[in-house]
Length: 207
Image (cartoon, rainbow, N blue to C red; front, side, top):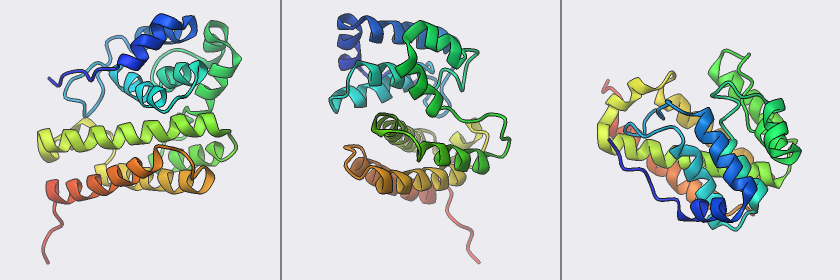
């Protein structure tokens, strides 16, 4: 099993801020018992904590950190936006709503395409969380490929090449909407490495 990454900035924010502490407690409860795919067996909560750690390192405020911690809670647990609104307030709940896939759309590529259309209508804070999430996802998958090779593909519902395709489209959208975001250069680098990693893990068949 992988070792959980340290998140000292999130831990410090949770000690200082009642909102961040409540968001962390809520996210931990929402994702209890879940394991993040491609993480080497880490509890799911380590993913939103890693996203929030990137946001904290970039200087974002408590509401953004709280939304970063909760960005998957509606999509991947029984929590609703309305329940989040009651617990952590409208600004954080609205960010989480913008960052949540429409699970009624069954086809993965179309679901992600619809999400990008909604992301185009939101402000910079949601875009920052979106970018930090994509950066965390791509680096985590590269680490999983290095650790497990192509066998990691069995942990996901869709082909890894399709995930890369979607993340590259996400990055293109972010470059167009918010080129000033601090996560874009490392995201481009991470996606380039991931593309190479996928070729090594699953080279194309020779004709």
